[in-house]
Length: 136
Image 1 (cartoon, one colour):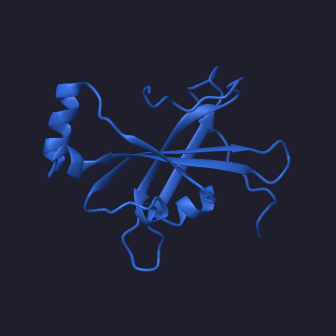
Image 2 (tube, helix red, strand yellow; image 1 turned 180 degrees about the horizontal axis):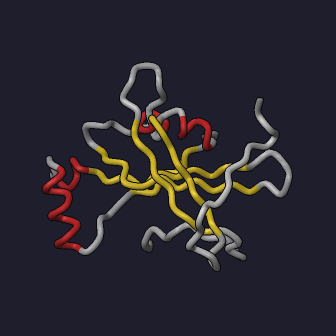
């Protein structure tokens, strides 16, 4: 069906990176539960969140790409890495999470960090810091 592709937009005014940590405390959300997956069987290997807004309430499309460890008889992280090295990729299931927005995904994390920058200027030196509005 095809490989998971990097995030992209038509004009690419900003491009970047993102990182997140899973939350393991009681009371936070559970991404596996949002996706209807059993943690003992599946590994979520990628999260893809896309929104369209144009000044309106955003319309979110959240996907997870999950690997079925039970079907592949993979029982350890080392086995998963070995399989990826042997195949050159991992076969995943693309699961569209209906009625899920980025807030729901964030509630499943300890921290999430997204950074977008102009693709034309990647080396930036901070020479001043400000708050807006000014904080007292």
